[in-house]
Image (cartoon, rainbow, N blue to C red; front, side, top):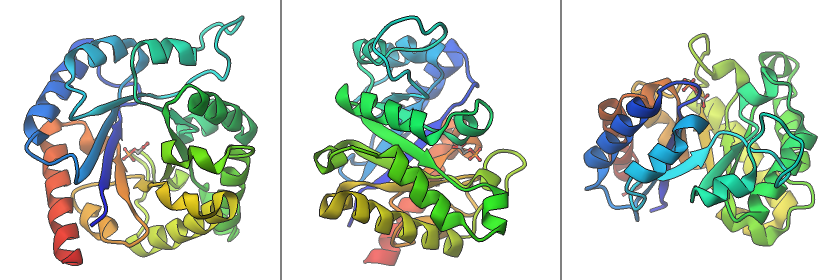
Amino acid sequence: MKKLYFGSNLKMYKGISATREYLQKLVENTKDISRDDIELFIIPSYATLQTATDCCDRDFVRLGAQNMCWEDQGQFTGEISPCMLAEMGLDLVMIGHSERRHVFGESDVEENKKVKAALSHGFKTLLCIGETAEQKEYGISAETLRSQLKIGFYSVSPEECKNIWVAYEPVWSIGVNGTPASADYAESMHKEIKTALYEIFGEKAEEIPVLYGGSVNPGNAESLIVQPSIDGLFVGRAAWDADKFDTLIRDAMKVYAEHNC
Ligand code: PGA
């Protein structure tokens, strides 16, 4: 059976002590689950990263940053250097989250620069992609995802696939006003993504896990995780309570195992 990925982006929530408490509880809750079966990762806010790396047992939870500058240093006020993130010993960097693209106006070309910088610093690089409601309405979801992938991974070598993760997060599904994608719709987009990744990287693309995100909750996690092209769940609000996230992970694993035995 394949390894399942479960992760959460804490966005601009949870300060230093809340992050410490959350991570310690999450490790405690989940440490009996074999890490051969799951990859668990949390992406806290910048200001809490040092505390997170100090307090969290990294054998159980990988830690990442929510964004990153493509340059190592320079006149980039307010940005965070990949060297600084590497010095903290982070495992992964998320690039192109929907809120970076749609609240802060980041383009695919910028995401590509960040992807290349993150990979060159040895980070697992999680590229987030997703179509808007308007693009879905016009019937260009697959084209949108394909172009986000083609530009996002432009001039990235297939040898880097071992460090690439992708999250499919339709913009219309994210956050308190989002509508979760149905399992069938998510599966059809994941298939498109896997086909596009194969076109970009060839057979090495099989190494890339593709996670679904966008209003994942205890009511839909099980129907999503059993889809053959969904390799994991990238969870926002429903993961921010360590007990509830633990339950969601265990329930999803159970259903996945039953479905695949
Ligand atoms: P949500 O967030 O689960 O709260 O919709 C998902 C995300 O932004 O990654």
